[in-house]
Image 1: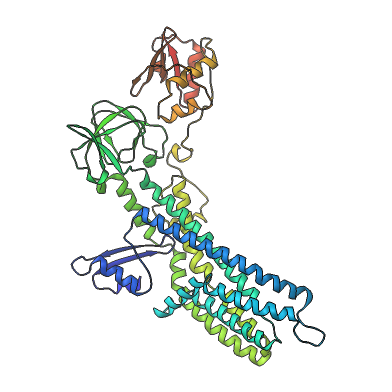
Image 2: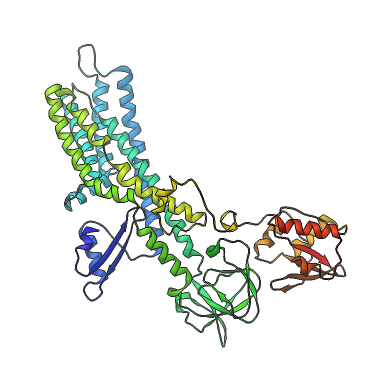
Length: 514
């Protein structure tokens, strides 16, 4: 951040380690995007203009590389531990105080194996430490590299001299466990990024624009106000617009949290991302993709995520001084133990350098917040201010603004009552047949676990009311009770049952015939 802020023309920089994104505001008259990318490359990083698909590809490459290095470290580390365990159990010295031949072979083998582990599996530690020192800052890789190099160099000397302990097993296991922690960290970041990107994934990349020669599939970014697009059942509105002719129900749960679709009639507003669950309709584009409701929601979320919580700011502020203090403490520890017991200087200094690594502070804090944001997004909760997560630990009262916040958004059949002696099996099969091709959430609930009738039934849709079909010489209506029972006379007990279901907050779907 400090390096980019120092560039002439850069107005503001917000860097998020967990998502590995940088939000940069700049004056195009003073600096170009290519200059900004070169400035980032100059300090050892590679940056790309944001693109969800490209970021997913880069994260997948990083994941595969991290897993490969972890497996490599695990396989080689087992060889080192095999020699180390033998030494622990049998001892490496003979009666004359000299190393056994197998212990000598094990030490030289472990020397070579751990060197390979440092060069390949631990390469990121050295690259990170060099980048930090090159930029005149102390990152958490610096004490890790110093600890590893010190342990390996001391073990090299012990292998040559042959009369002191070696630490090859500690080097191998430390590399393995740090890499394992970073794989878990990367997995968490990938899950968080996927959940946060899911908001924009509800927008289709193309749309069916209505032209004189018929429907033409065009990229969403090519749509302009005034264009007509066709939305079939199951399609999501790619941009904001108004319905033209007809009516249909739209699932707006991505905006409201309510799973029950909303009826939209001619001239009414349809927000981008709303899913048509009823019948084909035409929509007139009112806003371009960049100005849609979904893009505005994404911008608000980005702004909220760019505000760093108190713990994240604290971690960034004290991580460099903390590393410096660790290095000073290691030097003082070495001097003190040189006077107390020189033989114990090396293991104690290594312990100070590695155990006091500020990984939990500088790495776990932003990753934990990113995972929390991703978990919220996967549950349908959009974190407008991720800083509020810290306050949740102290909260003792939770206030929810609507029923949709408390539900899973997947309706399930809760109760069934057969009126006027209808057969339950036949009735459910008929309902499943009438809802066979519907994308409505209630249709999925009514079809679940039911085998529809073999024959296809011609269904007529009454938007906002229900379905009508002819079967067995009768006209059947499925939908709101007022629509389904328009031609039927219900008894008092049946009416009381319907009222009780509505009073309990249930959604009543009725099947009736003339």
